[in-house]
Image (cartoon, rainbow, N blue to C red; front, side, top):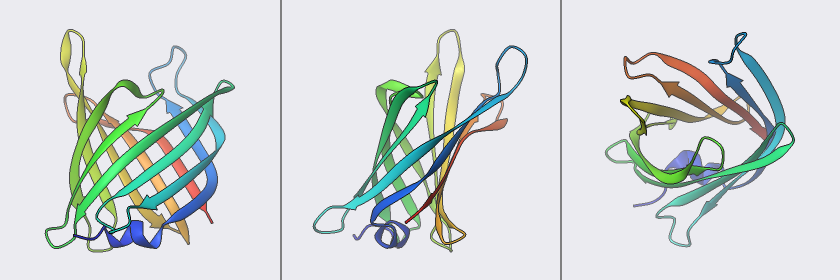
Length: 154
């Protein structure tokens, strides 16, 4: 099964910016922005793809990785995700859908000690001639807060 069309069309290196929104800070929401690069690589058979991205927070470099497999016929996508800041101690398994426009929407959960599980919902789409990634932190009651938004151009 080939990698989904969005990732095939996005193969290569992208440059842009990443905004980190910290909603639950004392004193209210803070937003920090850093330069960011993102690369999309396909395996030789185009069966799966990898996304590598980097960003900064308070002068410290961070990076993340996705390993993505798409089933275009079923409109399904699965991924493994790691990020040095957001959840660096395990690989999060994400499942999701591919929209009619080819945009990806994944969801995965993580444990919080002494609380119900929280989730990350991640969207990857084409936007204004570029590539956009948005990450939402999802509370146990289903409330979503935009946590990360990256915009990239060739």
